Length: 143
Image 1 (cartoon, rainbow, N blue to C red):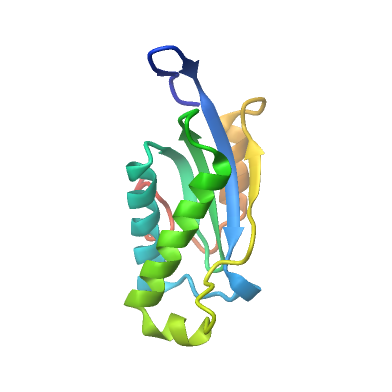
Image 2 (cartoon, helix red, strand yellow):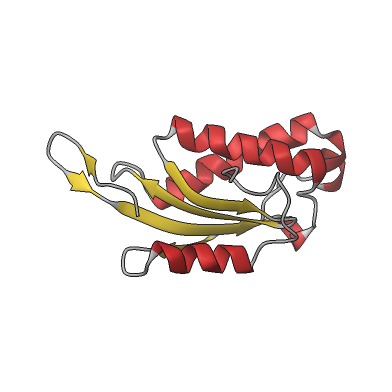
């Protein structure tokens, strides 16, 4: 895990593994859409003072292992990431807007697991196991 965050009156080291899926599990996160989705999520976490420890954009879902400040709830983090990425992807890729006629790109809900009592290696191994065929555009970090 990362190093502790220090504030005026707090010290924290909060991390969570988050997963969410595309609506109907359509495998639309490929090619340019996958690359742009990755960029949007990185921009989103940077704006929220969240650090990505590991992440993968698969063809129909997102895995993110993040470290976040105590002032941010997990539900608010996911809501902001899903909301902005949905709006921008549908705006930039008209074929998505046609497929998702109700303008709901992501399925309702998400999964979140606290990673405080398990090792970072265990989470990273799980993410690696659940990725699609590896390519340079699916990792949040270029290794």
